[in-house]
Image (cartoon, rainbow, N blue to C red; front, side):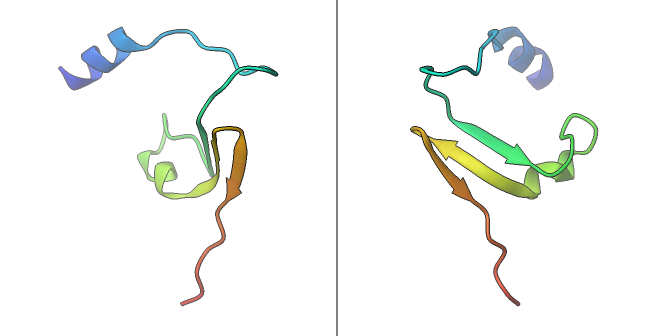
Length: 57
């Protein structure tokens, strides 16, 4: 049920100059491997880009 509801609520969107969008770039294809969502490369929020810098362990 959750997947069906999500797909019904998706609307076509465009990424182009002048449009506001919050985006997340990940390493990999989350449609094929859900674990890719845990490998965030960068986030764009309100027109600013934030790059992920892994913490040293």
